Length: 148
Image (cartoon, rainbow, N blue to C red; front, side, top):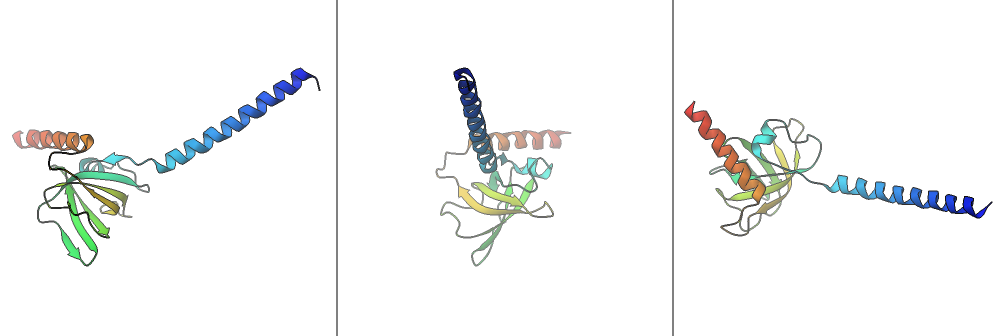
């Protein structure tokens, strides 16, 4: 083999290894990517059915039902509600009427969200920007519906 052919083979081999590594990294990134949805988006069917995602909003007043370590509650954005089930210990800041973000999947019927993790906001003045935007948007939609 001529030196030119060896160099060409080395470059092709290096590109193949680089391409394989990039494909593996992107594949792992896609599997671990978790999107955020509001209750209105979940109700409208925008949320994935067979994939984990996060749902955020407010814990609806009077919706928390405890049965040992199993908890049922409703997440709302004031326009739509999504029932959530969770088994485990809730954060200390979890309260009715306060902000919450839950990670998990929809059940087979697509009506109930089965949470694997529940996060409560850590400060009275803080809310994730996506959740605040969703709540503001839902409030505007709710107001426009009542005016019609």
